[in-house]
Image (cartoon, rainbow, N blue to C red; front, top):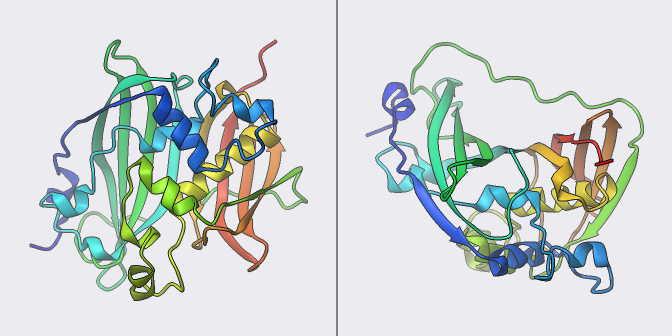
Length: 289
């Protein structure tokens, strides 16, 4: 049955649970290219178990409930889903290892009309299983291209974050490894689009593309490096809008504008002159005294 507004908004997504270890945290960082320079001690803190720190963006892969749009009776035409936006709020720095409970729900739906698709806004709140304390909250906007006309009140999507009209205050170039998509998929997203050339060609790409959340993770690394001095506790929020795919092996240029505790950013692929992430916004906590 095609998706219907009321049923989809009330869809019961089962809670999920994951126990991750220091090895998982290090694997996540390595999958994003952290530690490429083994003598860069600030990066080493995220890929070496001694006094291990965790990249803030790891929160987006924790306690994932699976491909619920396909696996549950959502009615969504899951083949036509596009990951449009991603947000993450860090309630506190992620511990090097923990058991995490994820509680997911659909928080809003905006129907653009028949033939025009619908936006589905999804939230996953993650808690420490032992203490019950909140760790982080992941938000996604899914553009369901095949589900326009599902109903609901007339609403318009919120506008993207405004970008400063001046030259960026910081620029950070990070080269991605040609194997990055193969490494990143070990964090849990095994979509063959990111590994199988035949699947990628069928989807209209010349070769496998990088996960959007991997590009998002590289942007988080750039913010950590260029703004936070590799202090993960300073990142409170990161949100971004995906605008173009990235191929593994490309260099990503993160341009950053700093206004108080807010950092606006875009991620470009200089070799193709395209913007991969636009209208990015991060909230940066002050450095500890």
